[in-house]
Image (cartoon, rainbow, N blue to C red; front, side, top):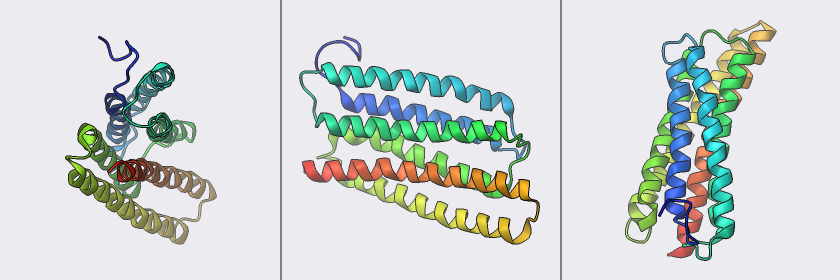
Length: 208
């Protein structure tokens, strides 16, 4: 049977597929930033990833609605799916604003924040691979959640330093607007990653 056939739902596989789109989007945006010169071809690739992810979410929600049996509460499944979607959408928004604001070069602070987003997404991929066995692998899952929280804390410090340097040393209003927005969006994406980890933690605590 295919993933979307039948009346039961393997929500854990749905989670894995969902987060794989977020991770792929993060890797693609990271690749477009990695040399410090924005690669607009890579940015364009993000649109198809976001589109595929959006189709997947709609199919997931329909499948969950029709399923007779779910291994965890439907509301919890939907919450995780939607929060993962928020990560992918946030990454897509960074790409959109990079294009709209004609950003041609990406500074070290932005590249560092983007690397943290990639790292957080990879940790979420690792988490969802073992989530199905959350009772047996509770410690591994908990350790991954802590690692994601730590990545977000590093991101907070990186963001604060980037904003301080921006307002201390930059005087051009347009430049300030552009980089403030991009820093805000990168930091917000890290928050979205932490949100997913925290929701998973809440759910597995209630089930164990």
